Length: 162
Image (cartoon, rainbow, N blue to C red; front, side, top):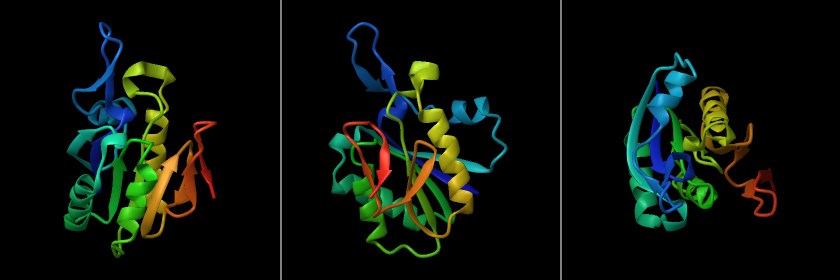
């Protein structure tokens, strides 16, 4: 079974047509898995719905606590892209044994339809979590990166190896 922890981020934001702002309502993951015709055994649990720019170490502690307590050895975490690498580092420094942890997110909300990269990134993360060795990874743009060898390029909007 793959455990998916939802933490928010652009991935799950909705668009307010009146104000033009983005907000959180509920996760889109169950709909995405159904739409993608996934046959994986997945358990989805929403831990929080926050923008990663507002995420702090207390939030990371909640994520870490749930990762450590999970019976699953394969864990995907949906996360905002701005602080994803920081959370990956936080988890890696806990030296969690025998678990493959993949963080993923989106630059464009899933609610925006076909312009969102969220659907692709979720599928990639679910595939990578099944084949990678235990450790902490970031999966974006169809690639996977070790937690300490990745950064978000703020000029291009892509994640890249360092």
